[in-house]
Length: 389
Figure 1: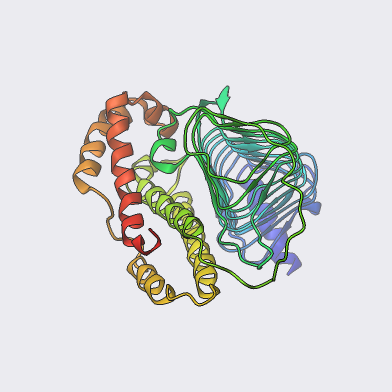
Figure 2 (figure 1 turned 120 degrees about the vertical axis):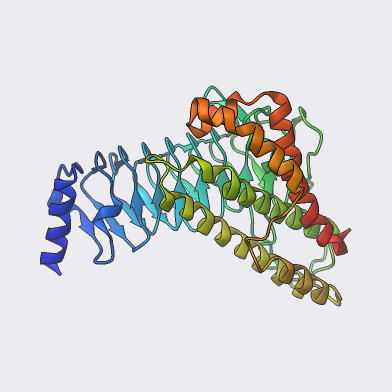
């Protein structure tokens, strides 16, 4: 075992991986050193596990404290300052602060970032989205913003309430959406610090929640300020385990699932054409695999919620809905719109080549075609789940 690990560390050094304290770096026997690129810095206390782990060029790992990486796909220029990272994807320029705790199903797209002591699981942050410190933000998708200076943000000491007294997690919240969010042309969302969001919620672009506010309802109109304090006081009878049908909960889950499928179509058709040395095939595959973990989670949690409904007859209908989407690589949505968008995208891709620059350079008319295509994917999923309407 020791000789194998020593050989791998020597291999990394020959590949121009920087090891300031090589004897304090641990590589699992399953780690493939060829999946760790040159220019990566692995500071003291770094532990890397798993056959799937890949780390792109120029990443800095463990600058502020020990880091454990397990089966993660890490794009170029990513900074994992300290903490635990498992079954997650981090795209170019993402940054995670001290004492991060990042678990399966999490994707941080380009230049998304967190400050210290942030916990994420089954969370997707689209480009530029920023989280402050001391945050628990599991089971969310957040988009919005047009650059690192104009980004959606969650303030420090914020929590997404994603577990109910009935012990279910059919609670994913959608802040922004995929069809517009991928275009990086929407108003940012700001969720004030010392606040919270009770899932499942949908939040429109341009929404601002004041510091200390607990958001308990959908905010579907854009550009609104939400101000609230503590919830209403009271003392009412309540019985654990008695769940009544909530069409809002079911529909918000289905809309969330529809957005994940829209993002999958975007990854399959748009992200795919940007494969390069800085966005290799293995990183693209990691995106698809991790997004599929997210879809599995959402189906599992919604299934458990529906099966637990008191006297409900929805279980068979839901089972049929889920079976329709068991095959993940089916083409969804309006294919004419997809092909039209891909055709108009090509000259911009040839001109800029880099993903973020290309998408941000698209004229409004082209971006709108792409948004309509992805919205047709969401609409198809929601229509197939129409038993909740």
